[in-house]
Length: 626
Image 1 (tube, one colour):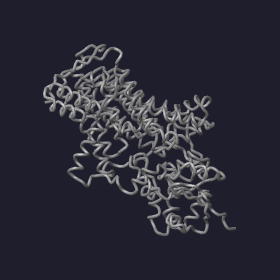
Image 2 (cartoon, one colour):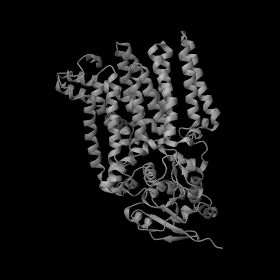
Image 3 (tube, one colour):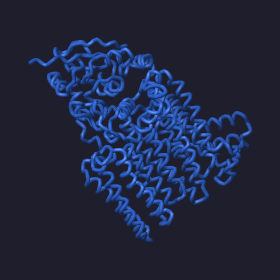
């Protein structure tokens, strides 16, 4: 029935005056980018209004946002551009070298620096933290309109932004106060896709490779996406051996290798070129890119006629890249979290949901993850089948392969869901447009309404919500326990997870500056809100201090005092209602966390009065007996 509507292909109307199947004309002013920005501005305004209370209170919902702002503050206070150490975390160990990129810090710092003379430091931070994430999202919305305009149906460029703002896993990364790097990852992935959909030229490859290098500089988590598009670029040349595809491949691999080195030097300096970290762009990865680029250049120059020969040479380039990576730093073959202490894995990493596989999440969440990708895949395959031109089939094939790979990755690591849904957007839009066109041609009112409703189901959030409603009606056990006592308490008290209400923050900040031991999740907010230093925050490079913190709270109580003093802490602060503290106190009945929860602290601690609405407690470490 979808095929009942005649396809609206790229050449069906003048770019200056588009006519839909309903006779609605888009004048020359209403370009896809302008429509995208209007939609995004409206959505962002609503988001700011809805989140206004949190914005005023700077109620950050993620610890990484708090630590990102601490890093920006240190930069503005005079810390070196190439010095990415967080000196207020684990001061006894000399601080922690963060694995984050100055690419993310720079616009935040520049915005605050510009606005501070006009509004003061506090308000300048609020303005930047409120407006910058939606501004980054506006760039993504425009990139979607421009990137997907090269697909067969020109209408996708106009409606893709509508589908974008209905993709919850994407939009949430651009909400006010969400200043961490996830929005950058999504934007750069879209920019890489946009270049992959352009006609094959050396310049398209160059830009794609530069965006790929920037993605890796922001976060090495983007490596699978970069490898995916490098492989797609190589496969296009291998299958056909065309001159244009040779140019694109050379441009991509050269820009990837050269751009990685350039971004690394610009953001980390000379030390960044020789460091061997596995959790961020560093020498092992750059060695891999250089090796892959060198062998790819050689393969393209040889340009063998046989398909098997081209595939073999490119396979050798891939093996050379893997060999260079492992030879430079063998530990990188095990992944960035392989060296974590088992107690840190048990009490922290397994509870970081974004790093876990899909089956670790709730069934309701799994439905919201899977449905948009499935709708996008169905639409993309149908669009590919209906294409008459080779270039259009090639572009839809690119979308299909990218979506399948990203969706598969999202099953293994939940943080990849946003990228998978980003690549699902054109397929969802194509299917929605076909259903809408078909429905508008139905004369009877009721069937036309039902057909239009079916078209609305291709919008990611609406489609997944509808699927959830249907499935929960069939399987009642899937219903979320939103009416639980803890859910009601959490809804009524926004400070429940950290206990850092204004009174508690003021009380802590009045205490003499010192080093505090807290449960892991409380660390970054304390860094953001107070002048104190912390033993550990939820950042894996500080793995030894993280293990000490957990063992102090959840381990042998006879060793807790020694661990606290070893890390130079003179205050122990915890939130009675926090999830991680609850885990600690349940670990063993005689652990420090259980003692503190019961109000029976060991003799080496004394109470410090702290006002808190949600149960923040502070205990001073007594001077060691001589």
